[in-house]
Amino acid sequence: MNIQQNLSVIQNNISEACKKKNRNPQDVKIIAVTKYVSTETAQEAISSGVEHIGENRQEGLLKKQNALGRDVTWHFIGSLQSRKVKEILPYVDYIHSLDRLSLAKEIEKRADRTINCFIQVNVSKEESKHGLPAEDLVNFVDKMKEYPHIRIVGLMTMAPHTGDEETLRSVFSTLKQLQQDIQSRQYEHAPCTELSMGMSNDYEIAVQEGATFVRIGTSLVGKEF
Ligand SMILES: *Cc1c(COP(=O)(O)O)cnc(C)c1O
Image (tube, rainbow, N blue to C red; front, side):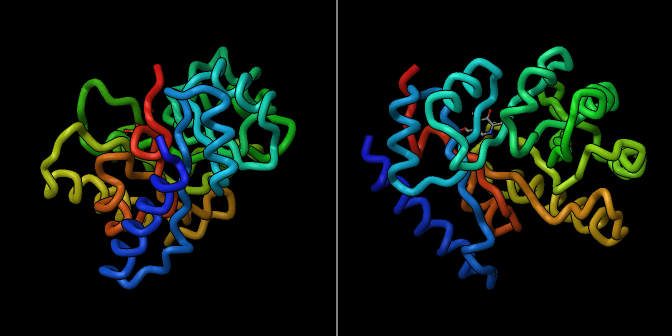
């Protein structure tokens, strides 16, 4: 794995995708998802210039951050059990998987600072996917005003496993529409300016459709386990 080289390929692809849509590539941040790789490999990613690290489990987050420190920005991207909230909160800069009221309650109860959260939306309506149903989103965001430690920075989704470009595009553009709807409501607690969407196989389409954070594992840092 040459992470430096992978990163530069991905940055180029993002620039191309941005060019097609008149976007500024600086508005797209790359989160290196390190869940399948060692702490050493994650360190290599940081040395190559990665500024955002994403982990989907408590164990990986704590282990890597304890070794690598807080100079990078840490994202919790996995589905989050309420009983793990207390333990991960001190380690996270962003949570990408807020998808239910009980989780919001737990975050509110445990937080001693404002926690930046993405609401995970189940746009594709796959049974297997976590996330809030799109039709519940507006009510959910509205409810979050009662949770002063939670700041809704944006929306997140996982696209279905498919190579079908139109399907992917439609999932991403739906998330963008939802984001714009929330943003237009000008909630103080929910600026909702960000879109976390796009992984190794679909990030170029996600960027064309408005992603501001892409979460890339395999094609950036590889898969060791
Ligand atoms: C694993 C994971 C990714 C990265 O997946 P790749 O296909 O390896 O790029 C992105 N987002 C979430 C939520 C993940 O769990």
